[in-house]
Amino acid sequence: MSNRIANLVAGLAASICLIVPGFAEAEVRALSADRGTYVDTVELSKKAELIVLARVTHMEPVTPANSGSLSPVHRRYYAEANTRALLYGQNGIGGSLRYLVDLPADASPSAADLTNKDIFLFASHVPGRPAELKLVEPTAQQLWSPERESRLRAVLRSLVSPRRSAPVTRVRELAFVPGSLAGEGLTQIFLDTKKGRATISVRHQPDNRKTWGVSFTEVAGRDPLPPAQETLEWYDLACFLPPSPPQSAYVSGTFAAKQQAYSDYRMVLASLGPCERS
Image 1 (tube, one colour):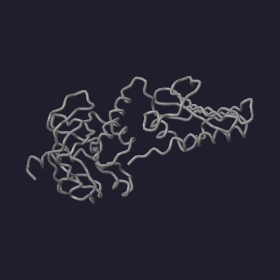
Image 2: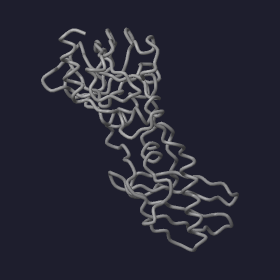
Image 3: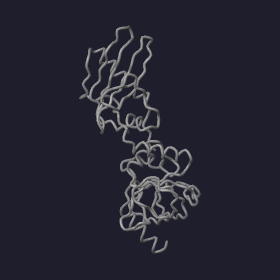
Image 4: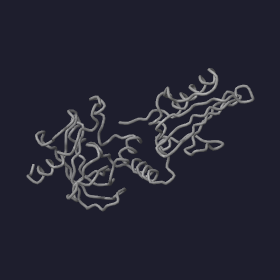
């Protein structure tokens, strides 16, 4: 490794940290440039100062002595790339980039070598070094594909929308009100979010059907709909609703009404599905 590269590695390695302290080894091992869920894309995008589509032109492993703080199941690489597009970022970026990235140590040499492949970088600028980037997490690199680019662009549009929803911060109240017909009723789950309030409504039909939806405004609409999968509205519920309502949440009504409200809360969680992170 040349002295120029060694100096770059030393400077960047001093500021890079383990990806997620406390992760089990198997969980850390699963992270690589070729993985990433919708949730990963959202959370990396929220952390990033800039998001770059680039083509890797050179990669080489960093010697353990120069790797700095490093997960035992990763190996650190020095990479050079050419900028293809700046997808997000207020400041400009040069045509040539240099950065460090961690890849699974058990990856084959061919899998670890991304030369001539297009990748997304979720990063920040290195002050005073315009050609160098620091990834927001040591593994914050994803291989390009048409599907990933479409997903990423949709996430970025949603994140900058003035009408975007916000993550849930608290379940404030649950209430079930029976209807006038047998089997009819309405459960409302009132939430606090980082931008205000939201309401989940679960409607019981006389034929035992249930429908539900969410409104991210102060007043719930007449017929709110559930959020589509892989949208920020879905993310803000699936990733931030607690597994069960906290004890501090006020639940009104009779014992039977409270039980129904809790049952409907669990039904909503099941309908949302898991908040999957790789």
